Length: 106
Image (cartoon, rainbow, N blue to C red; front, side, top):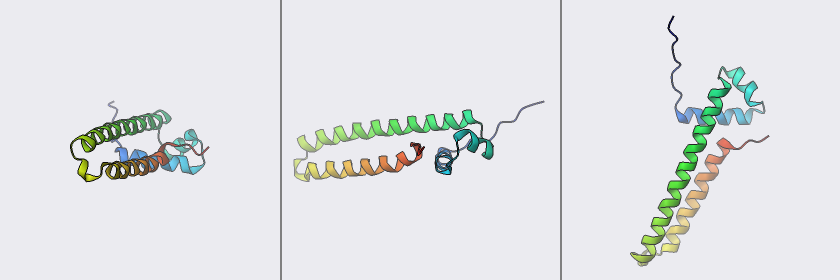
């Protein structure tokens, strides 16, 4: 007898399910049991999503450093502080939106 694998769940769907679980008020184990998801699979999703966020944060930091160097040394006429402040606001908003998926309300 051959075991068949379930279809992979896209990351966007994983994030939606993690968010749904966190907002349900149930324990992770109870929510997973009710929704037919192995708890180990659920925690793998959480771990992968957190790693993805860390990678994005790292890349944002790298881009910010590069922009800071470029804007102050090469193109001072474009008001670098204004550009950097705009990017910092964008980063803050982005991280706030992502954090809702990974914070526990309990």
